[in-house]
Every structure is written in structure tokens, then in C-alpha cells.
Image 1: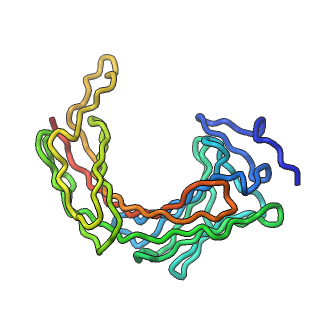
Image 2: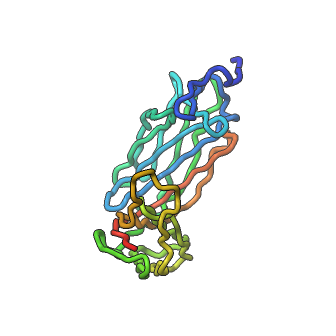
Image 3: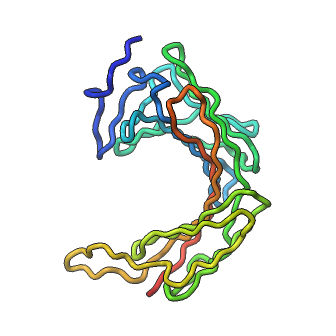
Length: 240
């Protein structure tokens, strides 16, 4: 089958664009696979997206599909398109055990090479036990972050974000289950304020702990990434 360039085929929406898969060989695709274990739910959320370049997404055609499987479960991912971003997602119910291997299988029929063997193993789950949701913290005081988890040789990342502060993060080496965010780490937003509107100095801030592991993409792809992550978040109130 003749393959033609994507120029002229794209539909530009909000800075992103979409091209039909029949115009792109598997060897030219950048694949992104993500498995997320949400806080407090016995489910693995699985997602897939395919791109040419940075902002050109690929939409699968007739006879093509992407399936995710692991822990004795399997799901065919469903197509979604929002503001020019095309992706595929689904859920694997009850698949949360550390070390479980998750496989993504892209089938392209007879038109091109399939990519059935992108794999990643689930990390040990994490659950924040401090801070408590709704607690108020001054930005002049430390914030103790503590979490529960089984043994793991993976590092973890603590991040924070809110409307009145600049986003930030702290890396925790493997084996640690607590860290203190130092006073002054949550810095007030320094952007240009909206005319006639006083910038907020107090707001809700999300404290999120993430543990992430990388997997192996099928060799049929040009490049990309595959990862599994576990997250736990708490919302606090940040004051000056």
C-alpha cells in the first residue's frame, strides 16, 4: 500500500492534529502507553496514544485495535478524541498486584506490521497517610508527607500544585516512606495578575505521591514510552 505524507491530511484542533492510521507505517509511530493505579480503587486504568511527531495524533482505522491484558483480564481500549487529542483507554478490574505484567497489543490487520508485545510491570502501590485532606498549612511551616507501601526498590516523587502557588516536587529515594516539605517550598504564584483582580493568597493545594516504573515497547514502533504508576493524593489548604 502506498504511504503518503501527513501534510495536508491533518485536522488541526487547538494546536493538535489527527491523521488516519492508513497513512502511517508502524515503524513511523511513536507510542505512549500508561497504566495508572488510582488511590482507593482496585482497578488498573490503561491508556494508549499514537503520534507522528509531537502534536500529530493517529486514529486507528477499520480492522485495527489495541488491547491491554494482565492478571488474567483483558480489555479492548475505546477511542476518545478531545480538542484534537486522540487516545484509547480502558480498565482492568482487580489487576493491582505488584509485579503483574501488563501487555499492550496493537493489531493492524494485513495492511501493516502489528505491535503485540509492549509490556510493563505494576509497581508496589502507595497510599498517603499524611497530610490529612482539609488540613490548613502556612507556607512558612513544614508539611509532613507520610505514606504506606510494601517493600520496593523504586523511588517516589512528591508533587504539589494549586491556583495560588507555583508547582513543585521532591524526589524520595527507594525505601523512604516519609519526607518533610521544607518551609517556603510552596511559593506564591509570581505571574502577571489579571487587571482589576487581586491574586488569591489562600487556595486548595493537591499533594500527590507517585511511584513509576518503565517497561519495554514493541520493536515495531519507531519510539515512545510505556510506564506504570501508582498515585495517592490529598488536598490541603495553603495560606501565606
